[in-house]
Length: 252
Image (cartoon, rainbow, N blue to C red):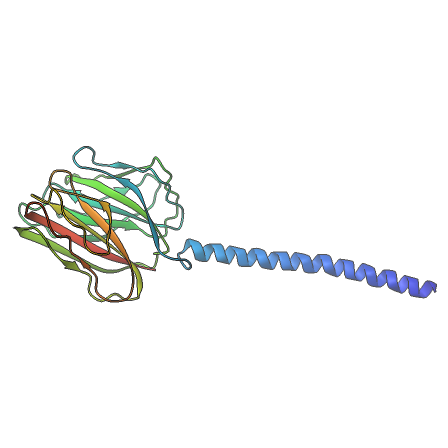
């Protein structure tokens, strides 16, 4: 009887020791998987593309933006720039939190036409909290028209295009061409040098900032689910005018 009791106690102790060890291994395994999951999400590996507007600005009241919404680590941060000068110099964009911005597209310099540009920082390493200042430091007359924060679009720029419309028009069309993958976000912006006090946004595009020659840049976006070429084609301007326009798509 004593021998069986000792054997039972030994077996129970072994099970307790193994259970603690196995629990530790299981917890470590879950922690590892959770870590990988968080990395995938922060890199845009899961979930749908979504956009939040973090700031808008009507020129010439200010040349920079104070953000009103947080843009978290791992997001795609985009700044839309406009200039009331003919400018070919590259812009220098800062959000005050050491994220590096790269030019996606900038309109060609054409006499008497203002400049439009899109700059971005992909998979940002540092949070951009509400109340941050996004500015442009080149002495080319640029101002930051709008800033947006995009989730799950960190796979890089796909296609870009630009337009310099030197004759007065009341509509225009700027196309992306065929996209590399079905799930992308298309960003468009235009800066009129005259006219365009009011207009109708392109079909399927959501306006971010409605611009005109008196208040600055028109900015909009469209999230797509097919590789078909996308046309950013605002129309019905209340008065015709000259303009520059840019478009860029970012991959999921």
